Length: 269
Ligand code: FES
Image (cartoon, rainbow, N blue to C red):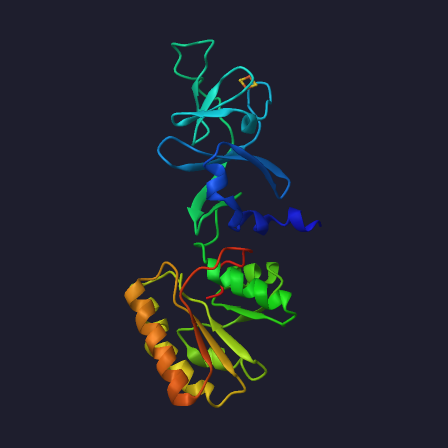
């Protein structure tokens, strides 16, 4: 099976182009063989839809934005960000054509890029995870990624990373995996779930893990201090990591700014 035919890949978020480019007008691109137009409406909302007008198949990316609609360049039919036909110039009183719509895709703007997922997205964006994993793979490192559940393991594997079942709520399950590991990346800045659990993996659970690291071959610990988690929680985690670095003499690094998205690894937590 071609890599682009793997259904799970359609559920990843992909950074497809700089937002500034879309601000200039509708932009075409191809993602996993889907021809898509990306555009921004008059209210500043980004939309991704099939680059094919349902009327006579003209390329919508060659059209223009009028208010909150993308206008087809051929006969002027207009579609809103949900793909609904809202105006047909040849039928000015109709207010659009019921039942006529363009296929749309999940779309959002983060870190100066517009991101698109073709099917229901898996998890939130976690750009730093992607950046770091991409870097490590490019540098020739063998990378092992953990997840608490089977679905997460499938994502890790699809990203070219060795999957392993472990749970940061139970630091022992992670420690069992680090006997042959040089560096640990605690990439939970966009972890989701119960607030109490999120605080734990950036607080007591993290501290417990750091204490035990001293008994392992790990020589580098990287903590993700940016993402969708409450900044106060991340700040506490970063502080614990720095303190552990001084106490246990473990080289630590705190990632506190997104450097620009590159690949989609999705949840490793
Ligand atoms: S082809 Fe788009 S309006 Fe006719």
